[in-house]
Amino acid sequence: MASGQTSAERMPGIPADSLSEAQAAAAETFRAERGVPVFGPFVPLLRSPELMQCASRMGLYLRYGSALPLRISEFTILIVARDWSQPVEWSIHLPIALKAGVAPETAQALSEGRRPDTMSADEALAYAFSTELMRNRAVSEATYASVVARFGEQGAVDLTGLNGYYALLAMTMNVARTALPEGEAAPLPPLVG
Image (cartoon, rainbow, N blue to C red; front, side, top):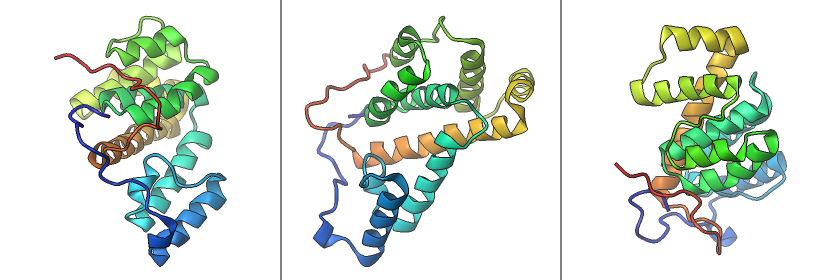
């Protein structure tokens, strides 16, 4: 559970026979678009079927259609998951990030709340952009210019979108106290101070 979560899951899966018509339609659309049933952050989001569908489509774009390489997208998702202490998000995206080329020691440093010293140049740009955005609620001229020079204006917008979208999912799961799959250990150590 995320930091501060000590109680049971607030919004577990809704039994199929208890879904409203709108929820059932949204769940079916989700399955058709993604090839899997509603999972993770989409379980609590199903309480707002239209929001869930919009969020799902945005996620599909940000993961598979954005101007950023998959490695940078997944690395950014790990940054956001760590910032929000969101274990489900981390658990889902860590294997994808590693497969996409994020070094294990880079991911380990993020999990411990440290700035990784093993980042590639592109990862360092994404890290600077994301951490400035989260901490300062803005991005410096130098960081913005570097991101635009490397990924273009669309890349800067998509990087902003990744931060915002995965923060939305993390917040949703933190509010809902979304549980890790049964038997899975908490993948994020608590941050101290």
